[in-house]
Amino acid sequence: MSRRTQTRNRAFILTGLGTALLIAVFLSPFASSNPDGLDRVSQDQKFDTKAAENPPAHKLPFYSLFDEYALRGVPQGIATPLAGLIGTLATFGLAWGAGKVFVKGSQSNSTIDPDSFEN
Amino acid sequence: MAEIFVFALLSPHQVLKASSPLLAMHIPDGFLSLPISLLTWVIAIGLIALALQRVQRDLKERAVPLMGVCAAFIFAAQMINFPIPGGTSGHLLGGTLAGVLLGPWAGALVMTVVFIVQATLFQDGGLTVLGANILNMGLIGTFAGYYLYKAVRSVIGFNTWRGMATGAAIAAWVSVVVASLVCAVQLGLSETVPLQVAIPAMLIWHVLIGIGEAMITLIALSYIWRTRPDLLYDPPHQRVSSPRSLLPR
Image (tube, rainbow over all chains, first blue to last red; front, side, top):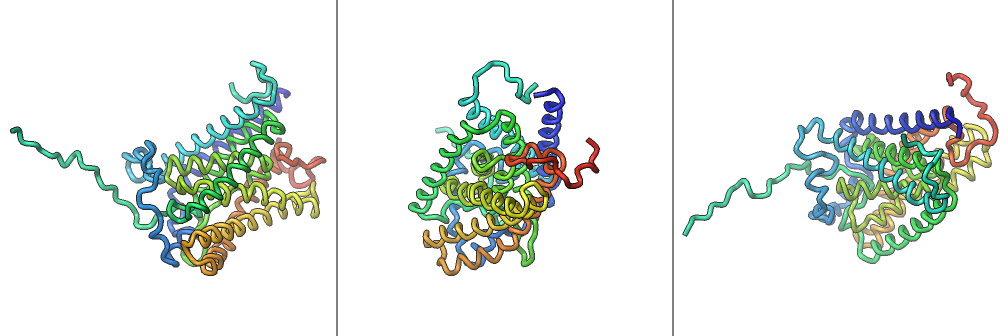
């Protein structure tokens, strides 16, 4: 891969991740708080009460960090933007990592990878 | 004979919460019966296993960072509920977008990561019904959405933005409507709500939400088409004719 392509690829990755972070941090407070499709139907049809009140996810350690999309222990105004920031970075890292692990299996296991985007 | 004091401090503090959970088409724990949960788990795991196999064989190294970017964008975009008429809201699912950008196999893995993060970190979507959520909101888009998009794009013009946009928009809309239909059937078979009630109720909202899905998918794809069409899973065969020359590059 040429140096120019590598630079362009890196620019695309940074633009994409940057856009995602901007959305998660600055747009999330403006998200509509109306019930979404399934919530609305469950309320209209009165089966919203069937949702587990204490779901298994509440037993995970993350529950002490996040109350849904709100980081605990910080002022309300920044709780959701921070949850969005952390969540977006976690998703980015996990998906990249998953790709790397599974692509590696088939490709040559050379230690120096010219196509790598990492610095 | 020491007196035992119970400190109020030690009692678990009650968290004040909004009365309605403002989450997603994400199914919470408790909505699906055990057989339906298991069935959807089996289908989801089967497709993910197949995707892992195919990705190992086909995926190019350079697509790996794209998986990260695509997952991050879809996670962020899913947080942004947009209002639709009638006091309801919707948000991007993103399966079709992931399928178009990365292909159905890597796209499936990306969607799986998004829903795992949502369910484990943010209690969005139940852990016991994660298989159903991955299947409905992810895999329907990455597989059915992708193949529908590709068929429409091939008919209208594989190398034109018009073909690309028409295919992606139709596939995005259809994937949301089909996802809501499948979700309704799962709710009906679980006897959570009668099937004949669930289907029209879910369809009415998601016919509208699907328009939002198509619009966001188009915005994201038009950026990629203008700047880096070579990154698409099915790149156009010749140089893109549309307004690319207007962009400084």
